[in-house]
Every structure is written in C-alpha cells, then in structure tokens.
Image 1 (cartoon, rainbow, N blue to C red):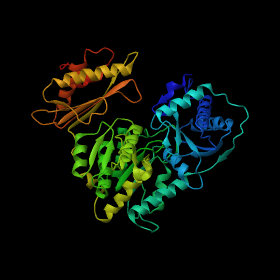
Image 2: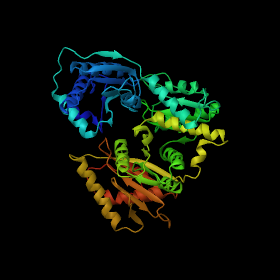
Image 3: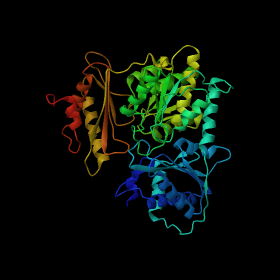
Image 4: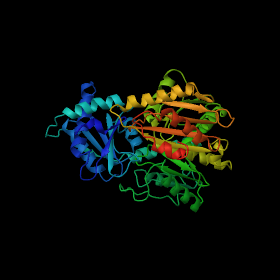
Length: 502
C-alpha cells in the first residue's frame, strides 16, 4: 500500500470498512510507529502518548492497532476510548495528564466506511510536511514483536467537560450552580462523540428537551454529522421549532466543528456563524482582525468592517487559516479568531485550537447573557447583508499534473479578466482567482472564486450575486474564458448556465 495516497492535508484518511480496506490495523500500527520514530529522530522521544477515537465502527480496532504500534516502539499508551479531537489536544496541556503527544482516530464528517488518524503535539496538529516525514518512516518501520510500552485505560472527557463548564461560568461572571437556568438548548450530536455535551449543559441548568442523536453510533443512522450538511441542519431546525428552544447546536463526528440554529430554526453556519462570532469578539476587541478562508462573502466583509474590525481572507484549509492568524499575531496584528466557512473556528484565547465545543460554549454563554437582557443571540447579525444567489460548483480535473492544469486554468481566467470591463481581480486574492463583478449597473455586487481543492482533483467554483440572475452571468463569463482548456470537466458549469446559454 502506498501510504501517501491516504494523506489528506495534515491527516490520514481512507476506507477502513469493507472487503478491500485502505486503512487497515497493520497500517495504523505502522503509522503510529512511524510517528514515534519521527519524534525519536528529532531528539524528542515519546514517553507517553494518548489515543482517542470517535464513534465509527472501525474506531476501536484501529485504536488498538495504533496502540500496539506505539508500544512496540517502547511508548506508554493512554487509551482514552471515545473522545473528541479538541479534547485530545487539551489533554496535552491539562495538569494530571500531559502526555507527550496524542493520536485521534477519526475521519471527521466523512461516511461511516471511512476512518483516519490525526497526530497532535503540544503546539498543535502536525503540518503537511511533518506528516510526510511520519509516512516516510512508517513505510520502512520494523515493529519488534515484544511490546515494551504499557497500556492504561483512562477517561479524559470529565476533565475536558469541567474546562468547558468553567468557561461558561467565567463568561457569565456567575459563580453559581446553575448559570444557564432558563435557557433552552437542543444538542444534536449526530451519533458522533459529542453526546455528553447535552448532559454537561443540563448540569449547568440548561433545559435540553428535544436534544437528539446523542448516543454514539458509528453507522450514523439519522443523518451525516456535519454542520454543512443541509439534511443535518434541517433536522436540528425542525427540533428547535418543535420544542420552542432558544437555540440548537450541532457538532461533526469528532467535535472540532459546530454550527447553531436560532430560535426561529434558521441555520447559523458558514458566513452567518463567522459574523456572529466576530460580533461577539469585536464588541470587546474593536479594531481586531478576523482571518477567514477565501470563500467568505462580500456581505461578511462589510459586516466585520461595520463592527469596527478588519476582514482578512486567506487560503482554504483550516490549518492554513489558523497558521496565518498565528503569524499575524506574531507580527503584532491583533487577531483573536481564525475561522473557516466549514465551521472550523480557532480562538486565540483557546490556544488557536479548532474546537467546535469551545465555540458552542462561547455562543451559549452569549445567548444566556443576551436572554437576561431580553434579546436573542441572532440579533447580533440582524444587519448582515446576504447574497440573493449563492452556489458552489465542482469542476473535476483529469491530467497527469492537476496542479499545473489548475494553474493554466487560473491564468486563462486572469488573462480574460484583465481585458474585460466591469471585472476586477480582488485585491485580497490569496488563493486561486477571486473576481469582483459590476452587475446590471451596480458596483462590485457579485463575485466568483475559482481555486484548486485542498484534498481532491477538483476546482471548486464559488459564485455569489446580490442581484437575481447575476450568478449565471458570471458563470457564463468564466465558461467562455476556460472552455477551450482540455482536462477540466465543465458539465456542472454548463448545467448551471443552462443548455441555451453555452
């Protein structure tokens, strides 16, 4: 097996279930051993490593296999069992635990047959380049039969839960037993690892009637645990309206992403979620810079500016966004938040860890504070301008060198934009090509972004328009600009434009 094919950004992911799995127990053991060898070679040998997993049916077997690989390298293993990805970071800096590193067995929101491994150090997850080094050692690792490392089963989630509860008390300035008394929150864990969150809120006084899919079930029988999935969000919206809750919160499988639903059942994810978190932070830190991924809307940029902040678009990919926010802070820029439209949100106050539960905790505390003033949480984003049209299309690539092909396509679009009236390449274009359009006599009331996917041989195309029909106008322009480039699939673009327009 060519392990590098399972690399997905800075994680390992692959099919782990079925007749021909890619991510096997043997491979998990080799990767864990490769991780230990990499740290040893770097002069930082691992004494103890914690391992956790999400609810997937293959999780326990892969955890046990990875533990065997570490123990064969002389590493002592703490088996946390069912856990969340953010908790696997927090254990590294929590007194009484503090292992040298941790592994999380998860494939995030991907289908049940998938699984993966995340490698985490005290400074955060490993980088893409560091994962390459781990893979290189895994491919040549020789695992001794004797396992000299120990295995100890432990439960870290209670300590992590205490940490989150403390954050709510701190935010509300309430040293009382039930600071959330009177707030009705519905939790949807999607049968992932986050079901305990509902009980944690109930301990703080929240009413959690209507909470759903809290029991871990790796077959995900109810809906995909993904805050970007329309079916999942619709399920939570329905529950919030049925039970008359103040808000609902939903997590992905390993709880590093979250979104919410307001009291009317309206989803607050993507640009709305970024706007909401930005408003909360900017109220306390005026002038701060908010780092987002590249596909955020023009309305969001306007919203952040009106709240006294600076919107800084960067590359897609949660590690890219987080690393850029860290870099900006080191350069003296006040940047408290790095956040993707996917729901990955990392706050400076929380070690720039992308933690969906920490994000939800911040929002729930703010919802309680506003309710005490007779206000709704969603009132903070009442002035967010939203597009009339918004679509994402995916253009598949088929070339021996898809990166080179993507660059050629982007160059074609840039050349066409340079000589077209009413088009301007965005000044904050840091990924692919983002073009602002003047539609129907307006000024910069539409935009498109074409880029290469972080993970797949695909060019995602995001289009937003403030005028009806503007999306098709922009798509038609792009089609004419790139239609003669071989190797790019234009079916989705042609279908969106319509048969009479291409």
